[in-house]
Length: 436
Image 1 (cartoon, helix red, strand yellow):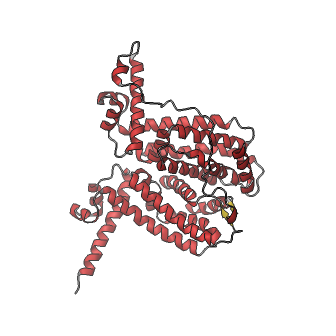
Image 2 (image 1 turned 60 degrees about the vertical axis):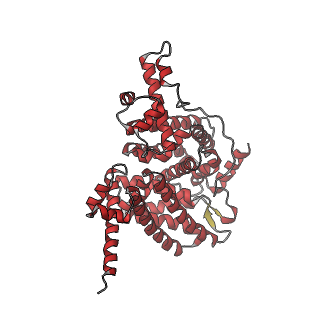
Image 3 (image 1 turned 90 degrees about the vertical axis):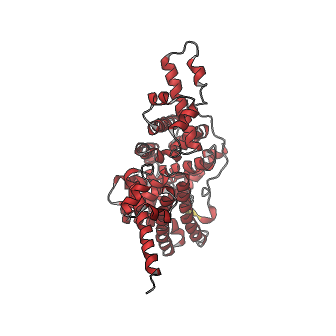
């Protein structure tokens, strides 16, 4: 008997057990707390066996991520192939929701855990979305130029729906399949003849209005100077040290990522010693949580303050978007911590991000008072609008040292307005704002 096939099958089973184990280990304790020992114990394999397949924990994580994505991609492909070409995006989102319903742990790994596992995992997550986007583009290319096709980048909407599903999967919400109809109706509100797309790329030049800067400004003076500054109290010195630590943590999140940053890195960057750090924060996570909390409050304050300056609701949305974009461009460290690194910081930061999805829908509530051209969007669609806007910021913050969120303001405004006033009226309004 030829035993080579059996041996290959045994090895394949071991690899599959390791992939299932990393999903389970990360689901229980997060990426930072998962390690090779936990993975092999759960998989029931030896350490040498682990290293036959993977070089380290990250390699195993990426193997599981790619495996999950490949199975999702096949479901998306089948859904797209049996749908009209102009409905490819809606068919893709339906497949994603169906996968999340059938495989909640693996879907959570793909939609949420991947956001907290470092740059390579983020690259894999984004590359997977790009593959789905490619399937959709190929289908849309077969549609008639007059066929109504959503005039928004599929990558943005898919990333937004990933974020939307992640929060529901984390909470274990039932009735996930009911989201399919709501999402399909929402995406349909952006439909426009394929030959006349305006906001699909979103990349339009825009000069943003001046916006208030965060108080997380330039790095304060060296500690040795601050300590001996005439008339400086102990409280002022402690506040100065805390600000230095926050700024250093934000800088390192952008440079190295949360997972790769150590307390020693933070203290060295801030010019403080370990005792000073622990006088202000209990651990690394506590320091990064403080940076994230600070950023959330600042960006909400800037956005809300601008929102109430508009006369009509669309004008308020535009003013809020302009302030939101301008603040993040002026404070790239906050943009990076808040929209790229938050999921790595821990459950508290993730909860704050997901809470902010709902908080930001406040700006959309007035849309229900507009003269609607069709069925008003569902409450789930409101959250999907916000998560899609967050996906835009995430992509900008990852792609460049200083995010240019304002170049996407047309697309963000279209996301917010079209479900309430219709795609045509939303486009006319945005054009007026861009030319005044």
